Image 1 (cartoon, helix red, strand yellow):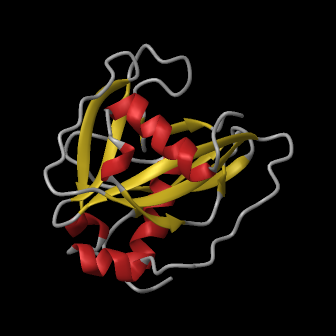
Image 2: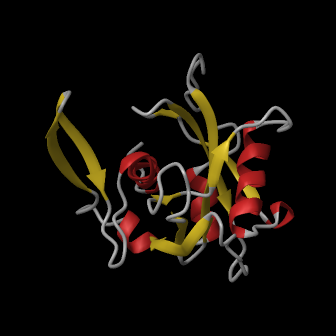
Length: 185
């Protein structure tokens, strides 16, 4: 997708749903899109205490020093993948997402310039990769999976990637992004 189409999908002042944080742990993620390429994702280091080895967006806990949700997402992306906040165009936010593990995630959508060099922090990020727009825009994806667990039947999205399993909160946020980019939401 071209930068103009990505900007059109997230017009200035686009409304988003936010929730009261309450006892949940507030977090922000950066949904960083590179025109003609796709959305940047990370595979968390196996040494991380929380969610080791899982695929995620750059992001993390919102701290008191963060001036805004957007500032938190940009700070975390700079710490995790070396993304210079001055080189990113923040397009807006998507609806907040609350996980079953107690996180309140605010997805911040941003446009990255073509070919921007990134350098993952080895202690946090095992790998940095792109989920292509061709996958996001393909109506066959994501695939809905069901699993029966302790709390009953649970449904979740899984996005295809030749080297990674993209599921959980990341897959749900990608689903919402795909619906917006497809003009469905």
